[in-house]
Length: 135
Image 1: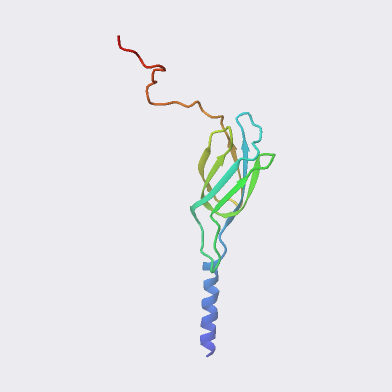
Image 2: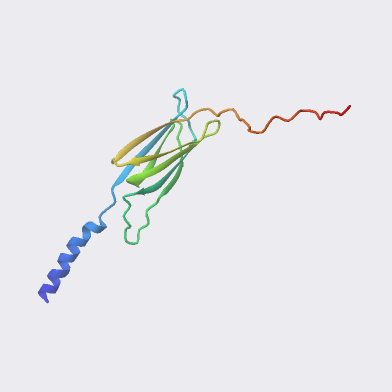
């Protein structure tokens, strides 16, 4: 009986590291425009793609966050698992930004510089403004 308890305790001792906490990163995203001024109320979407995510018993890990920047142009994301993440930034009157980052530190700041919108173009030939008449 005593050896059974010892074996069970030993098994439990070795099983604990398997379910240890996932390494997490505190992430901060700073959004500025092309001349360095902060962009407030920009939508920041962070999506965990792949990495060191360990399934916890009965606890679901959040993998998507959608937040808005403050008046100083930054947003702080709750702790996320370390690995590859996709950061997208959408703001009115700016081009949409999207890039994948690999985070492996305990704290990380990502700086995003938004560009003004590009002029629209078309691959179709221009149409005449008035129909031509046949003589």
